[in-house]
Image 1 (cartoon, rainbow, N blue to C red):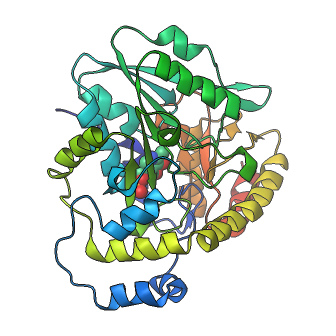
Image 2 (spheres, rainbow, N blue to C red):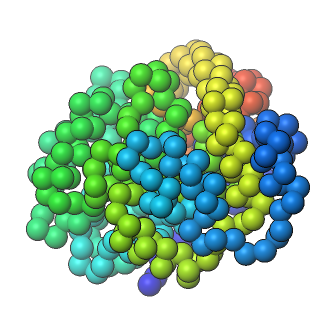
Length: 371
Ligand SMILES: Cc1ncc(COP(=O)(O)O)c(C=O)c1O
């Protein structure tokens, strides 16, 4: 299997630990170990203090699977497999797809969601988000029109990275029903779940709605704990979980022992962690909106509905790559151009989850004024 370079990851690798200001991170401000331990109850602290640094159970710590199961209505702990989030995508796609299959994926997309199916020899149809009256939209009829006899898998990502798009509930139900009518598997990347701007707009996990759906979740984004490298696949079919597990034996075998205990603590403290991330995003969103609306000749601001990112447009006199290169070279501000998503059009990603966003926008203001 041959696969191309992961453009977004390579772009981050170049700047993430070198540029002074990061404008495009998709994770929420990370907690310190001390902050997380300070939230833990005595039973979890005892797990932490007595932790043996041995191998762990390959499907995940039983208590962690139980806590994850609590996030779903219809997924018991036995149908949760803990994974590194990115690994979850790989093992799920490896297990579900074969050469010659067809997959449909919401577009633009986190690269592994389409590059792995392509590397496996599948045909991939991209279901594009388009701009309609200043908002991101998915053509609801596209899915039905593009399903063929070979279509095996639908890959969704709501809230969506990078646009922050979230479909209305009725549209989401219709998508799931279409998948059900055609017997498709659904891989639903829900890494940004819990970050809906209006909590009433939060969608039910796909695995709760549909027996052939697999929900991918994790602690990297909404929970502010990307360094734990902890996520999970939740499904309704034990046979599927067993197939994902079989692939995991060839990737990480099992989770990291310290991460598992810290992940249990994080899920116990879920409400506090999510409230913290949501507060940061709410404040940053106001600052970002004010900033981009101050420069209407240069930017088009497209408000997100969820997640921790937005994908504004840059007017075309300047290419987005040149704009981003100038920002990092002149002001040490790293901005992710939409071209790393292979997305046509002059868009760039703004990360709304980091505490220093207002300061980064002040620095960017100096750059923008000089353009
Ligand atoms: C949509 C989406 N899925 C999966 C991942 C992978 O998460 P992780 O980096 O924690 O493995 C990311 C990371 O940016 C993402 O944006």
